[in-house]
Amino acid sequence: MAKGRTVSARELTEKDRFALEICRKVSEALAGLIEDDKKEDFMRNYGRVHFSRDAGLGKAGGKLQRDALCTRGKTDKAPFSNRNLRWHPLIVAMDTPNYAKEVEEIAIDGKLLVFIIEGELWYAKDVHKLPEVYCAPYEKWYEIKDELIKWTDDDWTRNSCVIPAMEYSTLEYSIETFAVLGIAVVSNFYNVSINDAYNSVLQVFERNNYRVSSEFPKERDIEDVVLCPLCLSPLNTTPANLEMREREEVFQPPWRKRKREEGEAESLQLFHTEPLRESEILHTPRLVRYGHRWCNVAMADHSLSETIDFMRAVVEAHERKKQKV
Image 1 (cartoon, rainbow, N blue to C red):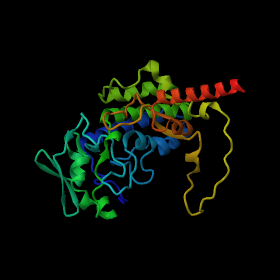
Image 2 (image 1 turned 45 degrees about the vertical axis):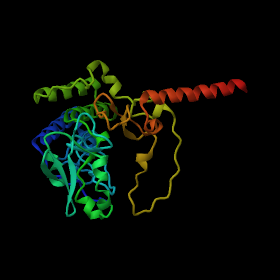
Image 3 (image 1 turned 90 degrees about the horizontal axis):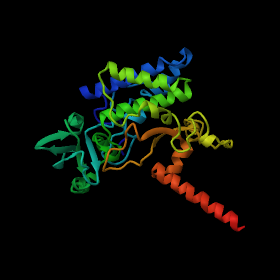
Image 4 (image 1 turned 135 degrees about the vertical axis):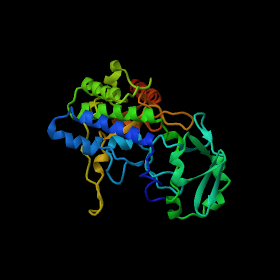
């Protein structure tokens, strides 16, 4: 399977650099509100911005960059990028969504994918330069599947150049999501006033002549940004403020990195309050939040409203059972 970095990971367009630069400035502005002895911790774990398409190797880029600006890491026997910018202009989907144009054909040159777009040939290493969003739908891949099934892991690594349509977002939405998640982090974990963080972000946008979209939260709604969207508790507390049981240690080979903290019920995870779909852009500053892992797992691939309806039905069923006893 594709094991390395996404194709042309270090190649950035002018548009890419603009987005990463403004996010870097947002991080620095938020860090400026944090007590001196905790600034480095915020930048190292959350705020650091790496000027690459995939947030760099290891933890070169912080959690905000990985969650807000990049797609999830993938190492499938498929052309998916192993992380890439969410506004990467070549997507794949079952059917071409209405915000994208369709690739005319996918060809193979040796062991390299070639996308034929409006009569021009685009190789994997160059597709990040496409001027608009294009989709290579399922049927185009089906036509060449018999050849692709023979490809090796190295072949796929050389061609990891597309992102799933359901993870696509615009550059503007990605920048604003970075800011929203940053506000949530500094207000919950670094003792920064919510309003100070919000105004600091707006000042960065204003200084860089950036106008926020209609999806960016208004100041009157900013308090909702810093709570877990499901249990409505602060992110620096346990889910629903419940007392958590202490988990037993589980065997882990001593030569492997422990990731136990990531599995804790209160661990911070990326939330999409509406499940992502291929047909529309749902990674937006209005719909993306941080929440507790337990709450995120409870939602599965359902929306916030669907999850609440489900939980209400479960509670009512148990109440009815108690009344019969």
